[in-house]
Length: 414
Image (tube, rainbow, N blue to C red; front, top):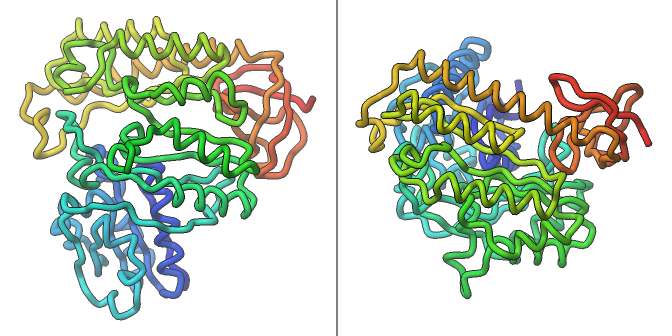
């Protein structure tokens, strides 16, 4: 082992940050970087398991642990076998944190709640990926009762338009055809900038100032904060991908209130209806928590029925996971086996919705960004596989959907 190995857990923002660290740490030898996630206990368990495995397989390597879980509880991670350094979320993005001399310091974790700015970094390569990510926003000012992430990421802060445009332009010049804008609380972008521009205005500027960008996509957005510019882009801009991923979490109003979310089920239904009216072929995704504290059978059924009625094809379902220090962790818990059973039922709803949605795309011509020689994703983010032959990864090709199976769409060249 020579160049650093990076193990990334969690969100797309972590993916982007891992590429920043890859560049900063390029000169180091025999180092394993573990970029952790704190969204669920399972995410932390997987990271701990990966650290133990890495130490067993490479006992001479220095293991550096960073990310949200390390930011929130550095002491816990510092005691794991092989861990020689723990870095906070601010420190991991600083070049000086990866200087050879700094590697002798066992810990560098500052108060993330005091963070004022996003770090500006030019990332031009994403290892093994044909789709690139750009951080436009960091942190969150909201306090959903289940979520520990604000304490790992700090307050909401936005990357200036010029920084985002420069990053996107560099990625396009490096050969990327599609860019995904990402953040912790995406729709809060601009609230701390002069004039308080909206996320939709940022997207317009990116598309206008980087004409070579072929596809622009958004990561997860809050249903009640989708601004009018985003709606206009969905309706009129072919380079703005017809896909919305909603931070939904539940379809029961009482559970949403106990989560301290800013929307009700009706709000989300209106967003989905408006999106489909503008782009009938649009792909809709949603994050959903199963078995939130106090959720009884009737309240769970409200969420299940809502998702079935809305036909959301891209469901990311998570059994509720207690996060120490959050209000929800003190509420009456649903037994873990029941959480898992409810999550399985919701995934079945999602699978049925996905099958129905994929069938609406049969016979259509899809523009697919190939991620491997035989598979990729359409503009609507439908997973597509070539029925025969191969293509070059990173290429956007025209395909006609001819069949549906459990993995998505099969397609032939047009």
